[in-house]
Every structure is written in structure tokens, then in C-alpha cells.
Image (cartoon, rainbow, N blue to C red; front, side, top):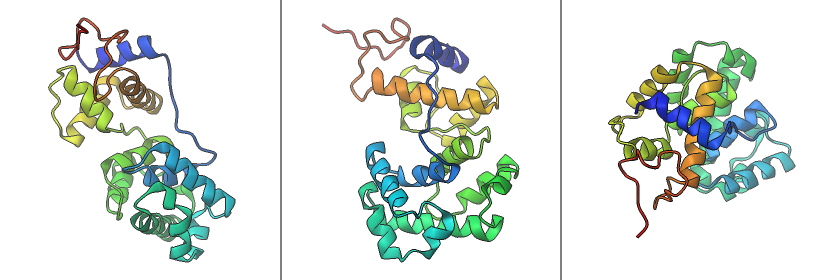
Length: 216
């Protein structure tokens, strides 16, 4: 079984489950930054606060008093650091691209990823989430779910973020739709079957997964 087999099995078992809930590209970016180390439910509350205050915009964020921004995003946790991260990204978007996300989208993937990784509070997973879901660049998101699933399936990919990312992109192609679908399917599968304590009954990898748990 290789990575292509894994993705195809997920498609057969879970359907075509693409997602990143948002009403704007900037909301996707804000969500990616706020989602670090917290549940999505909490992120939604923070984003709703920003919308209610009518400040879900890079220039509006820069115009906010930092303590006010912290209060609005408090539900997302680590709100002092995340307020700084949001202001850092907003300043970058304004200074480098005049606040124009369409202009930002036109930059080649490798350069844009390097720019994002240079910003305070944006690591590989957050950068690739922004690239893939907000900017439409072919950059697979490797998260804890991907590491867990690929480890349990015995694919031998290891724990290097960049290695796993490259392996997936090489296996299924650098296509935005396929990569976003693959990421969504991995997350859905790990929330359904490949939990911290796995629920193997009905899993599409039952019978071939070396980590399968048999009841009784």
C-alpha cells in the first residue's frame, strides 16, 4: 500500500469531503492563524466577534487598539500572541501587497511560502493552510492527523514535515483540488476511525492496517 492507495481508499470510504468554512479569503487566513492549538469551535467564536465588530479586514485590524483585538479573539486561546500574529500578517499584506490578496495570489508558490514562514507565528502547517485554502496554491497541509494515519498504516514516511508534504504532493500530483480533498479526507478519517484510541470497525483499512485493533 502506498500513498496513492491510501487516498483512493479514503475517497471510497469517506466520499468527497472538501471544506474550509469561510465567507472571504481573509477570513480563511485569520482562521488558519487562530486555529493553532485550539478547537475550531473556539475559532468560530473569535471570528464571529471580529465580524460583529466589523474589523475582519487587514486595515481594520491594524487600526484596532491591541488590547481590543486581544479581547475580540480571546476565545481562540493564546490571544495575546495571536493578536500579535494577526497584526504581523496584516502589516505584511498591506506593506508588501497593498492589502490586495489577489496580487498576493499571483506570486509563485515557493516564494510565497518563504514569505509566510518568515512571519512571526506562521509555521509550516499554518503557511500551507493559507496557501492551499486561501490562495489556491498546491501545497499539502501536514497536520497531526496526517502523521498519525501514515504512521499507523506503516508507510515509513517519518516525522519530517517537509518530507511528508513532498511525498504526498509527488504521489497525488500538485493539484489544488486533489490536495485539499486529500487533507480533508485525512482529517475526517482520523476524527471518525483513527482516533487517539482507534475505532477500527468499518475502517476502509480494516484487514490491511498493521495497527488495527481487534475487539476482544
